[in-house]
Image 1: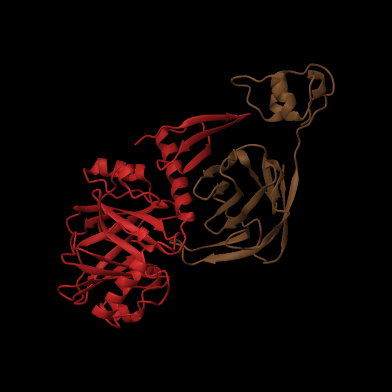
Image 2: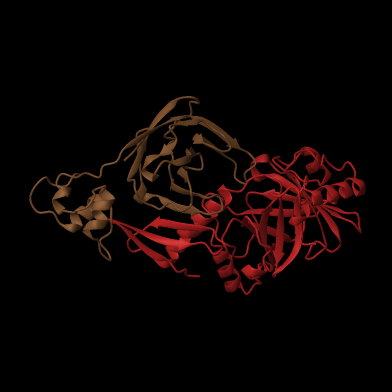
Length: 176
Length: 279
């Protein structure tokens, strides 16, 4: 939701719009920088400001059965390696164009979203919507995986496959 | 065992932060109001196990099997250099028992009899991605349904007595059990029964658990058992994961046997095959 276009603006309201914590503190220069404003700084620059972010990735659905696993499973969606399905454009703008490694559902009832670089943090996007299901970042389990140099958001107990089982179907995945 | 968590606040969202004992994974889980530390620990365990098992691959590897801080067996994929040597010995010593080279991820080992029912130097063979074939069932006079079995089984070849034992790997064990590590909701505990060719079955049953170090440490502490792993600095470096645990128990007396840990290393440097072994 955008900040008001007039009236009182507080640091905490600006911080909330930017997705920042006010603990231990925030300063105007830091917040202005995050919003892309150059010096000199003024609170008035934030009138009507919106930090809204949205991007759409298009997944061409693939599937993969792993019978070598200790608990065999089937996944649907996109995975870069081993290759399964495809994605366009496959770079995640919320994380400075980081490569998307996978975006898929498993019949072990989990959904996962993985991007490259284990230094990425659990921030900068709020939810993804695919196949009529909404997956919020706040409800996900987040893993920084230094073994495979990637980060992953995952959701368990997802019994409905949001990608469907039709191979080569396209599914829009909308991130906000 | 209660772990140390960090508390993370991002905007209005709260998370529990945790770094795995190996330091390779950092987790953030949604904070749940009024959740106990034990419940948080359980969620961490489940996520950690999922992370470990979900990332295992069938590439060429070795599993070091630890009992009471010592390596008791080294299971090699058959196409590693060490695996090829053991496979050749197996084919010479026990020719045509089954199709040992049926698929490339099969694993072999040569080991000493470190616990009942193993008493002599032996060869071990695991056949993966297959439900135990009818010919094997017939040879050991057993009759398992496919729905009872995992998709692999093992054979143990005694190099002294020439006896062959069957490890039937089953999804569940219907008999009495002592208390065992809790089962993961997806990666359930499973069991192995050891059959002799004369139709008898060993009293010693293996319970395998996809679990975590913390969980197994606590289990060993509670039961007065030896924790299988040495300190981190005494583990051979470069391992992918401590991915599986075994708890042996006697199905008649419910006495515990050894606790085992399976530590996996991948063959990534093909120019130096012997980097896999401790020997």
